[in-house]
Image (cartoon, rainbow, N blue to C red; front, side):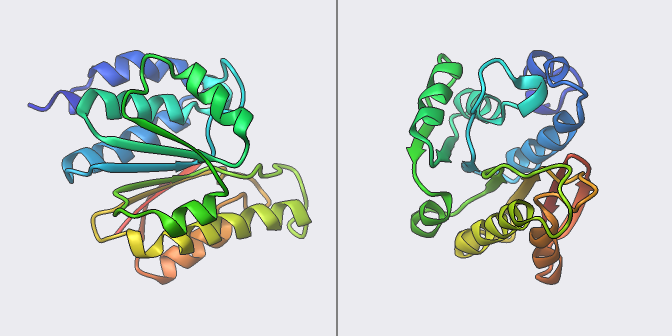
Length: 201
């Protein structure tokens, strides 16, 4: 049996109980399970680590994906517009980032120019206000940005791709509102929706 789906696999033992309330553990693990058994190669993340020692709060997806990619010889890209965030991310993932490509760039431009197919796309760039009203400019900007990221990556996605979106479970609709509407209208299926939304074809 493949070691990644054992109930106490190495990744679970290493990270599950470090991830705060655990809601991101389940969505991230399922996303990686799907990627793993669909024999994916390329993982792309927008929005990298921006705060040290914040796995319980921020999720630390860069470390989670980077360690997985190194363990199974996959390719992982993390992109952020802030150079200081990229430098922090390199430091926080030291020892687990041999297969990680750190990119300082606007995420939409990066996705437009990305030259390969994307097997797992994780979107978490631009902060999303949790308590703003639904017509808040900052909230709308974060929603539109995530939607534009999906559109920029659209021709790199395929029927076996996995999409994971962060900051969903806010009463104002969260960052994922427009993205989910777009993906549902284009034939994608949500497998779970909590702190994150996980979708497949």
